[in-house]
Image (cartoon, rainbow, N blue to C red; front, side, top):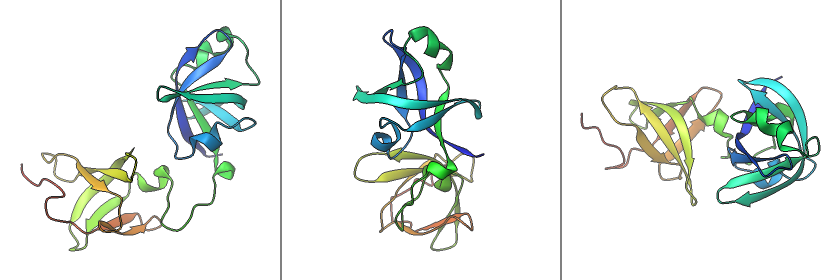
Length: 175
């Protein structure tokens, strides 16, 4: 079964078996909702299924409790592990919406057919996501491409590429 990470367990919280999670999902309110069944992963191997009891956002991290645990000693071992969902739990997305794992790794090509590099990360910055492009030329810095209609012209997940309109000043090509 394939799993998709939705949050990193960074620490315990309190003494009642709660954990601190840095969310890695566009849908944290849904993923950490009471009753949601998640899988704890260690190095991408499933360790245990857990059911969310409660979750709240606090200073940029989610404090999550599970039905299965009520003591700090029960959750200590999960520090640095991941919370994940399986493929069946993924929601259908609208056109022009993609899961991060579908975008990361795609080739980036300009409308002039120049290959710039590969998407290595996605930053969620409020009004729109920004894609981090690892450049083909080693000396060039990563490029930051906003996911907006004026720049991103085509996303083809099946073929493994993205076409962008390279606006003047968008990336630095200086060595």
